[in-house]
Length: 632
Image (cartoon, rainbow, N blue to C red):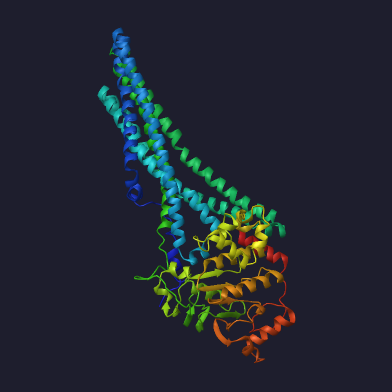
């Protein structure tokens, strides 16, 4: 028995965040990133590391050379060494500048490529997840969260590399210079380490928790703004601007507070490290001054030591701040991997083969399914949609009509029973080949970014311009398309906002026609059309249906009177089937009652388990409340 993805919804949930990361988690995440991407960037990383080591080496040389500068030029007055020492200093600075430029540009190119690579990888992964995941996840919030987190992969790698190869090596080199010049002063100056390490460890824990909260709030904010702009017509129609502004304003205030908190916690390291460094440098200078003035020791070694100490402060401070920044990048990277680690449900069965449907006969055998285990939507449903014929599915709202279409496309898997096409169980064929054999027109047409021609071509990417225009003619769309500013090459705007609802539906129908599939699914395909356009599209669809197995979901019974077979559903069960004439022959049939209601009052299908009555219009305030809830 197959399981519905809804039954398995908990598997889609990302692991809940724990405030304290596991030991070595940074290493584990970095190792995973390098394992997945390191081979492609190995030579770029080698070049970057060489540049970083060059920067580190020249910095240490700058401190080391201060001893001969002071002793031999200023103390011993060796004028013959001035040119050589100046040339050495100039060479070190030029080399460091070129190396710094090379590593910065190379790391930026690697980082930008990583971001693009993970964006493509995340999208490919999202398309493999089941429909149930997207039913439970708000699209705007998901897109915002991905955009917020994807840079964490890049930052984690770049910070790790620069910290180890530049700051770490530089600090070690300068400490070696300090020890070489004065071991006693070196040991005393390193006393700054323990309190600094304790401070960094404390701040890391705080930043880790606040960063995740900040990412989630920002994702909610950006997602809410995106959805509000998409539903701006509803917002204005119900004058909900003030209400939405208040709610989004609260989200913006929460995001601001979290960002300020991150800044306060992260920047606490700056005054602490400055105070500790100030005490250390002051102590070193006081002791060195005492030895130079009282004991008469040459100043060269002291100057070299102080130079190394001052130069070591910057890499030490960057390393300390890097730990705090690393925690923020780690949170981002973990949230990306939580998404990538979600296992796609309803995968192709082991050994699944490509579907090869010759006739297109669709058979439902005792199919049961429910989005929630305790609430079945379809119950022991059995019927046959004959090959090359038109089968209409009618029933009250909630009877399971659209669920039936979703199961046929394997958006979900059945709980019991089976669905077969030409005798092949669809659970044993690949989803791509199954859906490639089906052309689908939904009652809510969706158009993508691009031109009208692009949207029709999505039905079959290999379709020629001639085939696209022929499909548009069959869908009664060619006339209005040619009236657009750029004809078939006119951009449609976000979700086809530049077209009317009926025009969007006709483009959607043209997309299904150009697919040229053996099975055609029409889910209330003409619901957005006026009577004249509906008549033209119905005539076109009649031609397209010839030789194809067609399943029509309909509320308006006028669209199914000519169907070869009509299936009547009630609470997920098949209660009647036959032709329009045979079903109307029994005046007490459910279908006949539906037909009388529509014929007499012009209403859609109603719940036949209750007395037939005109639906009471929903109060505007309640409709507005639901609209706001959907947006936020």
